[in-house]
Length: 124
Image 1 (tube, one colour):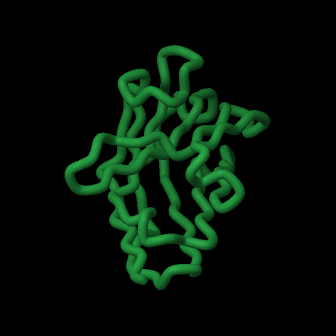
Image 2: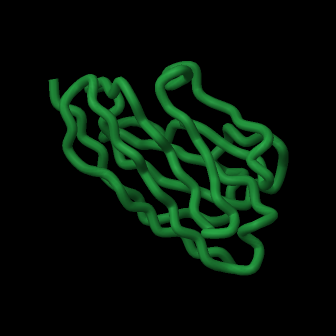
């Protein structure tokens, strides 16, 4: 089993930055690809970013490419999402997820484990 706990969300002005953290526990973490997703009120869950088990491969949604950076520290069992140049459109609950069953990292249903989420609110 893998347990995920997000932190680092909050209120920030447009143009500002936040760093989200996802603390993972469980023996499978070090070999698990990880993803970040977000969901705004009234919208479907949206892919944000993903990273391979080694950190050697990453993927980003077009809407965040160049602004967000995903990284991981397997020794500390933590995955990060550095968010820069934030926009009001980034406002959402952000969830980390682990253990996709396929290499299709952008599909939420492919992930087995999910954190509870952390709220990010960007004011204009």
